[in-house]
Amino acid sequence: MNAKVKTVLKFVFSLALAGVLLWLALRSVDWKEFWEGLKLTRWVWLVPFFVASVGALVFRAFRWRLLLRSTGLKTTWLEAWDANNVGNLANLGIPGAGEVLRCGYVSSKSTFGNVFGTVLMERLWDIVAIFLMLGLSLVLDRDKFGPFFAEQVWGPMTSRFQFSLWWVLVMVVVLVVLFFWAVYHFREKSRLCAKIAGGLSSVGQGFSSFGHMQHKGPFLLFTLGIWTMYLLMAFSVMKSMPDLAELDMKDALFFTVVGNCASVIPVPGGIGAYHYLMALAVSGIYGKTWEAGILYATLQHELHAVLVLVLGVISYLRISVARRHSSL
Image 1 (cartoon, rainbow, N blue to C red):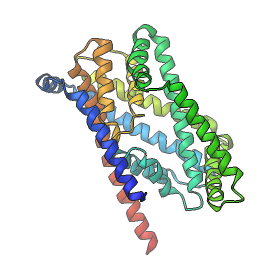
Image 2 (tube, helix red, strand yellow):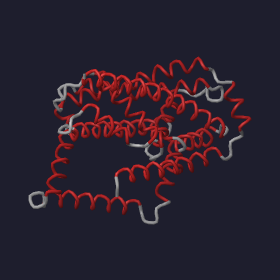
Image 3 (cartoon, rainbow, N blue to C red):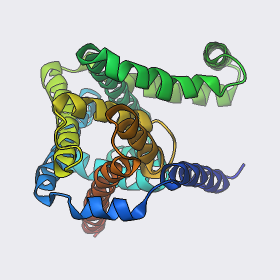
Image 4 (tube, one colour):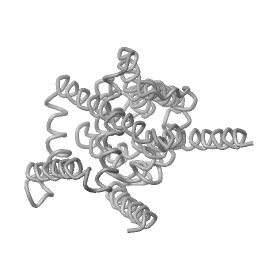
């Protein structure tokens, strides 16, 4: 199938999924109550929200640069910052497209696989961070947060499969293992397999970049900084809403975990999935109105999307100008 057709189909599917989830989230909203809540928003609390949002992006650029340097790429912080911003901008339209796009901005054709491997390593550490934060949430208040994850997140994910989720996972693992075996077994007999094996080897070198890194301490500190900023973002939005102002940092931790669970669903910018899960959490656990949950999700998600849009456009223009000057 043509690559452009695949891209269009992927975009249409993700947009349709986003529309369904957004409809589920908004279908029972009392818009009068929503707007009344918006009028009561304490906008001064959104100043630390934006500071923390930018801080998370700054830490991400520093962390990615460390991984890139461990593969031999002498990328500047500004190059990593701009590539990340343009990638985030692309993710607003097509989920996952930004991860590939940002690799293209800092790599050559021969190093693309290595760079993509560093992105996979970044995502692995983000998954580890989410599970650690989830574990901490359950330790802090198992009776409150445990049933929500069991019934509203894990339960719906598993009950909608016709077959057991574990059988699906086993089948996926078997297929992946067979794929790798076939590629490496026939790499000397098939040009296609040889090309795939070379690409996988390059990605593997990038993925193992953390093991070759000389400065693991700063990498872990940047990772901690990223997720601390996410925590402060959630806390700031909570404090901006009178309905949620009595909640504390423990609740902000829970909101951060729930929001990142929503990001797994492949919809543009997380729209729809994020709103639905956050409204479900706010109304189901804290006994607040569905409208309060939608307002929290809207403030958190849309304000961050605006920041990503602005920074992405600025970085794209800066990259374009720099490349034009270098070609003269």
